[in-house]
Image 1 (cartoon, rainbow, N blue to C red):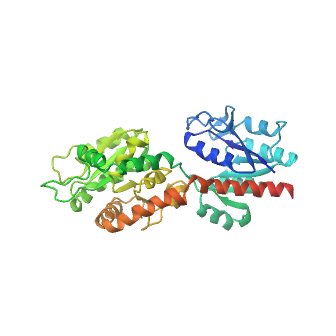
Image 2: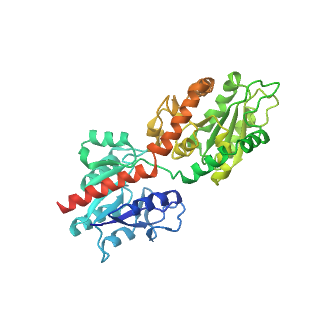
Image 3: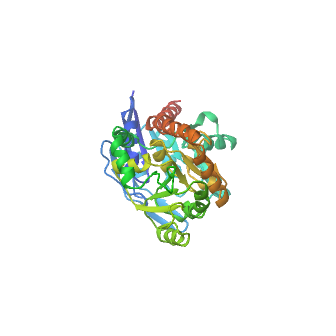
Length: 397
């Protein structure tokens, strides 16, 4: 028997398409994606899936409250679904209406979302959990949030995990291609002065990388401040910055002040702004020439992008500063943590990691396993499938 499923999303992001295609391919599940526009993520065409777009209505701007007319309308369609997956966000006013409609029509309900808020407040948590308890089950991104919800009274059998993932297909293809051409990779590194030794630098200079939009919340300024101290132990250390954004001008000013952009001495640290790079075949040689990804704060799916190239990740130790991807980091295994907000701790952590090449190599291997096995698209969709089947069984009972 096929479980007819509707998935309600605030936007149809490009990086999500492989996940929804995987879910639609699961035996016994038919999928329709109802999506809208959240104003932050650019929608793509629903290639390879059954998708329907309906614009969002903004009810209030402060606090932000939204109405997605396509979600309740989908429950009124002649082809009634068996299960609906709703976005677990208290700012979406259509959620309670959809729950009521689903209950009246005998449709199973799954709430999918973070399960926590970076700007948590008692009223938001109470309202979110109240809504969550009205569903047959909830689906969250991380095991740590699952544990938190269980501690708050949710039944363990009603909380499922879909580890947030990125499609590794293009990443692994680009990685294998460049590694199969070691001479070309060496030429790229030589042409771009990456990891090279010289008479003034008898050992290859280490390479750090950051790849994401430049946002003040990500605190790259902390890393800039730490680089001169790192260079005392690791002369010529370089930081590659891939991406653009609102914080670039400020970061360039900091770089100029600290003499990081065009240092006269080869032993000094150097920061290089490479701008946005989108194609994996062009990103791959930069990552494969890097020793460590440093993401000072507000880390997201970039952690799995980096680990897909076997590059370990260092970030701050405060879960509230990150998305659910914080669970990806296993300190000392595939990456590490430093004390949130501390330039000294950040510099010491980078120095320590770069000083133990054997441990860094082991972390690199573990990072690759994390991205390709532990946080694969298939693993993520296993969580979705389990939640869908549970909700379908609950509605039948």
